Image (spheres, rainbow, N blue to C red):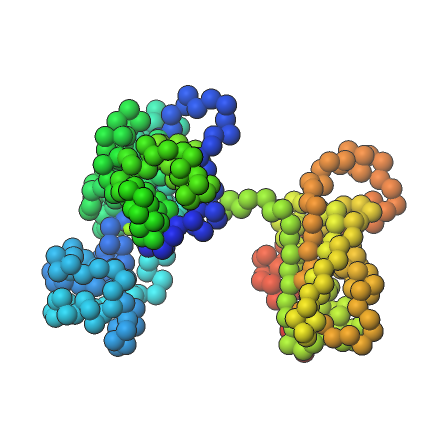
Length: 426
Ligand SMILES: [Mg+2]
C-alpha cells in the first residue's frame, strides 16, 4: 500500500528502479502485471463479517482515541468521500453512521500470503510491494496461460472466488505502467497499457499518477508547467536535469515508457558491498575484557552475515566513538580473505589496541567487513593443495557454519559465545 510519500525520491533511490537497460537490445517486450487488492483491510474484515458490506465501514487505528486514523474504507464509505489517512473524527463528520472497526491482528498477513500463493501458480517472478500489491512478470507464462489480459482476468476471478476479495490488475510492458494501470479501474478490473498505445492512455493523466511522483514532487513539477505525464515525457531533457537532477531525468524516462527494472522475487537480497555491526553498550567500555567481549560479539554477527551471502572480507575496519561523541575510524587489510568471526575480531581488536589508550572510555563501537569477495576465487588450489593454515581455516569454517545452522533452526539464543550469557553490557 503505497501512501505516496511527500517526495518519492528516497523510495526511488532505495528501490531497484532504473531507466537504463543493462541489455544491449530490448527487443523482448515483457509482460508485467501489477495486482492491487481493493480496499484491502476493509475487504478482509468483510470476509470475516459479511454484514459489514451493508453499511459504510472503515478500518481505523485506535478507535477509542479520537486521533485514530482511517486505514481503509469500503465502497459505501467511499460514497461519503471518506479518505484513507484522515482522522476518525473527520470521517465521522462526513458520515455520522460510519461503522469503525479495529484492525484484526494477523488477518491481513494471512490473506496476503494466500493471494501471493495464487500468483505463484502463474509465475515464480512475484515481487510483493507492501501487503496488498505485487508485480508479476508473466512473459514466460503466456504459452501456458494465454495473454497478459487473460492471466490478469483469471487471477482476478480466482482471488474473488477463493478468498472473497477483489483486485485490480494493470497489464503493461514495465513495472511503472503496470502499477499505473492497476489504479485506472477499481474495483475488480483489468486495465491494459500496451506498448503501441501507451501514450494515448498514460500521457493525459496527471503527473502524480506515476509511481514516485508524490504530492510535493507533483507540486514542484506543476510550478514549471508540467501537469500531466505527457508534459513530463515531452519536456526538455536538459531542463528537467537542471531543475530536478538525476531523479528528474529518470522520471521523464518513466513517462516515456523507459523503465527496465526487473520483477525481483521476494526474499532476494542484493549482494552487500560491506557488512557492519555496531552497538552502544549499556556501559562505556574501559577494561580490555569488556572491549574484547564487545568486539567479539559484534564480529560474530558480521561473520554470520558474510557467510549467509557466501562472501569473505579482505579488509576489516572499526569505528570507535568516545563519550564526547567523537568517532575515529581505522581500517587494515587482511593477509587472506576470511568469513570467520575470530579473524575479524582479532583484526578489529588489533586496530583498537593501536588507537585507544589504556583507560580511555569507548561509548560505541562498530565492526565493518569491507572489500568483499567470493571465496570461490582460488577454491581449486585450496582444496587440492591445502596449506596448514588452509586446513585450520576449513576446520573453523565448518564449526562456525554448524553454529549458523543451529542458530537458524533453533533461534539466535540457542548457541553463542559463553561470555554473552548474562553479560552486563548487553
Ligand atoms: Mg490496495
